Image: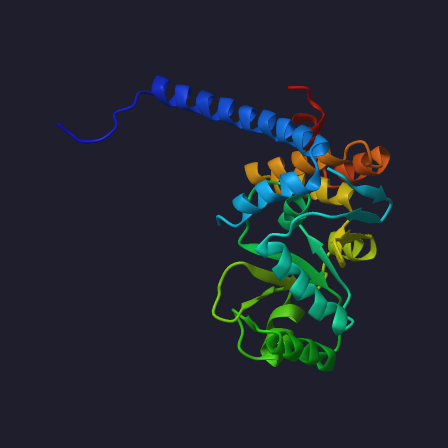
Length: 56
Length: 203
């Protein structure tokens, strides 16, 4: 029996839908994050952002 | 975010990352050499709080004579930067910058993050150079592209990351932006559908 995934067209369609849902949720998170940023003192958000920026 | 936003000027203070410090070091060489520049693209979103890293910082520098460029090159080397994709200033100037191709500088021994430099070639590039926003960050200063243009440009670039950067900048600055200007930039860059989806549409 062949190893690995075996996907139908319906499975791929589901995957596409999941990708779209993820994109939408990312966009919702960007808005949520921007709202948090706007009401948070610079010293607080920039300390947290620095950790993420310096991970790369 | 505590920020003073005026047309063409943004003032704010915050904790600096190593990337911010490197950018400020690089632009101080440009300032010392009196080279006009504008930072565009992803670093602008990061500068204003976007939580992601980057491999490069994109800049346009004014078109200049070879003598001035050579002096700028030497000043960068003196400050510990080296060019990653060209070995001599003459080749960089004649075969890259003059041929609409970018050159990249990083700190000696490093590859990322690096600074991708181009001469302005298109109308969009020229406009960016002529409509800079001065950002006063802590005790330093740097020039970025106009925020309205940057949002539209990110929509024009079109990847998921670019759309997220555009949305971030719009959501962070929407109370300060010149909406008519933003709509014009969106129209001129032919990204009205993208703006509808990424900026205007309610979730």
